[in-house]
Length: 126
Image 1: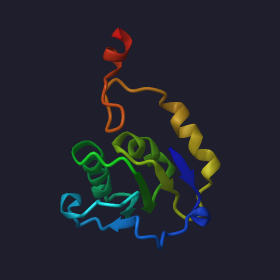
Image 2 (image 1 turned 90 degrees about the vertical axis):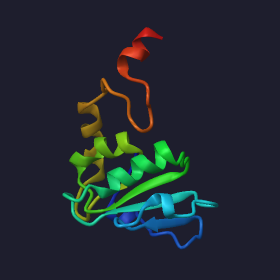
Image 3 (image 1 turned 45 degrees about the horizontal axis):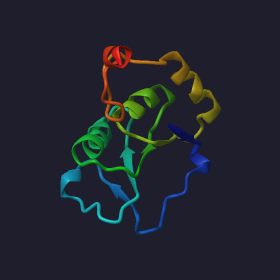
Image 4 (image 1 turned 45 degrees about the vertical axis):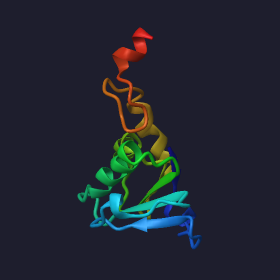
């Protein structure tokens, strides 16, 4: 997962990048020609964007970039990566260099994820 600081993120003005609001159903959005989708976390306690990312990856098969914006905290990054986000823009004032420690704490998971659907036991058997 790519981590951006608040200052490194620039909203796209390109038609190939769209923002899907938290109250929108991704199944009702045309994804034709879209290469980047921004999903917004208005508060860190609002998890609707996790569901949207998972839906986009697993059910709709979206292969482009899914970017988390808004109130994104470092402790959310692992869950974001597992639900399908490629890029996270940290909340203003957070240090992007500290983010890698969060991934180092959780090097693997027993269950599959939106990106890697195979569970750990199946990988070991292969």
